[in-house]
Image 1: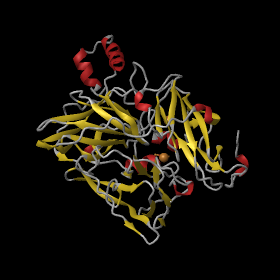
Image 2 (image 1 turned 90 degrees about the horizontal axis):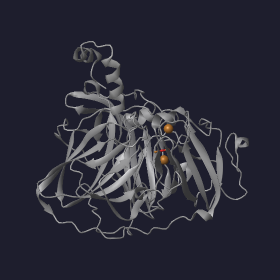
Image 3 (image 1 turned 180 degrees about the horizontal axis):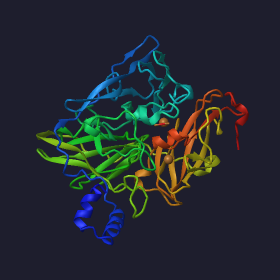
Image 4 (image 1 turned 180 degrees about the vertical axis):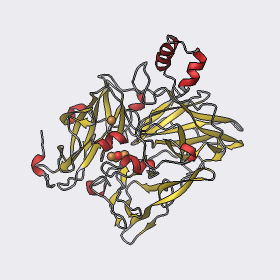
Length: 498
Ligand code: C2O
Ligand code: CU
Ligand code: CU
C-alpha cells in the first residue's frame, strides 16, 4: 500500500472506524506494486555480446573473463556503481557445444574476493565456482571441464559464502548457452536476431541510482519496484522474424515472476532449466523463481507491439499477499517490424525424454527448509552434510517447514520432479530442472542421478536460491564418492552417510 497515511486520513475525514477497515481490506485485496501501463518503453534492449573465445593447442575452448567494477546509467545522467564481467554491468553470453572442452580464465579486478559459479552445469566439484573456489582480488582462477549435457540455457553468477546477494545485485550475472547438434534446426537459433537472451531482474533505483548493498526487506530479501531486462530499464526489443525464441532467466535475488503477454496470447514453452522439453507445450504463462530459466517461442504479426508482463505470481501466501505475490509489472515491449522474415514451424518432438524410474533410486532423503536452515542446520564450510555414491540415483524430498517462500537448487545435476504434494507434477515441471520454487506447504520429490566426478576433497552445494536465505546459511554440502571412499575435507569426521 503506497498511499501516504495522511492522504488516507484526508480521504476518510479522519474516521476512526473506517481507517483500520480500509487497511485490512487493502491487505486482503493484496494491492502491491503495479507498473502496468506506466512504463514508457524508450530504450532499445541491451543485447549481451557473445563472449569471444579461442581454441588452444589442447583443443580447449578458452574464455577470458574479468570481474570488475564499472559505472552504469540506468537513467540517463545518473551513473550507478555496478559490477560486471568484461564490462561495467552483467556479463557476456558464453556459448559452448556438447562434447567440447572449455577453460575459463576468471580474473578478479574487484577489491574483494568473489567466485563464479556455472549454474546448471554438470562438472567436477572443484570447477563449480562455489564458496570453495574463491578468487582473491588480483588473481585468476582457471577451471576446465568437458561439456556433457544437452542443449540448455544455463547461467553464471558469484557464490561467495554470505555475500552472494550483494554480488549478484550489483550486476554479476550472465548467460551460458549449451549447443547440441541433436536440437531440432526449426527452433529459432540466430543469436540476437530470433534467439534472444532475457535476464530479468528487479531493482530499487532511488533517484535513478542503484544502492550497491541489497537492502533487506520482507521474508525473502529485496523486492525491487523497477525491472531491468539485460540491464535496460524500460526496454523494447525489435523483432524481424515471425517467430522468436526468448530465453528467459529470472536473475532476481528474491522476486518470483509469472510472465505472460498483455493480450494473453498463447506461446510455446520449449525448454526449462536443463534443456528442451520432449515436445513444445502451448501455454499463456510461465512462472519463474530466482535462478530458473524457460525458453519460449512466440509468434508475431507484422507491425504489432505487445508487452511481456508479470502478474500475481503464485507465492503461496494465500489471500494475504506478500513476497511480491500481488505485484504486477510491464517488463518488455516487443516491436514487430512491418515485414517479418518467415520462420519454420516447430517440430512435434524436441528431445528424447528418458524418465529416471523411481525404483532405481538407492536412497531417499528429506530436506526441510525452515528458519534459514535446512534440516535444522545452517551452512558450515567444514561440515559435509551428506555423501552420495557415484553412479547412483537418489530421490530427494524437499519441503518447507516454516510457512514462508523458499526454493531448492542442487549443483552438479539436472533432476526430474516425481511428485508435487503427492501428485503428478504439472506439465511445466515435466522436463529437466535444477531449481524449483517451494511455496509454503509444498513438498516435492526430486529424482537425480550422480553419474560422474567422485572427489573426496571438494563438495557441491544445495540451497534455497532466495539469495538472502542462501546468505543466511540455508545451504548444505554434499560429496560424490566412489564406493568405499571417505570424504577428505578438514572436518571429515562430521560426514554422515545414511
Ligand atoms: Cu545459482 Cu548455488 O547457485
Ligand atoms: Cu548452481
Ligand atoms: Cu528460502
